[in-house]
Image (cartoon, rainbow, N blue to C red):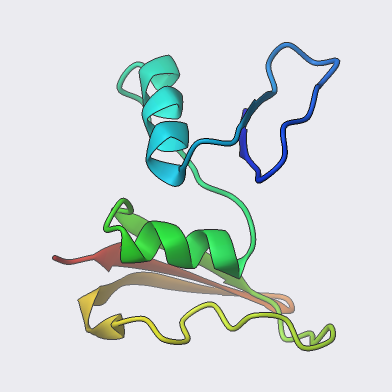
Length: 104
């Protein structure tokens, strides 16, 4: 697990590595460890927007739960959503799973 952060931290778990460089470095390190397998990026809207703006994402999976907590950051605000192609929608109890392909 690679954690993109602004401040260096230490972990007792040797499988958790903190990265303070930039999002490209974090992704490159994760990809090298993944050895060709899929790399998943987790985090809040700010991190997701940075990766989307940098065109470093192939797919976007959203698990939409209709709950509002404070103000937060809207995931797709100020992004060009014309590059999102819906690959699938699955409705569940209290959640909707949406899978998008990022088309460049």
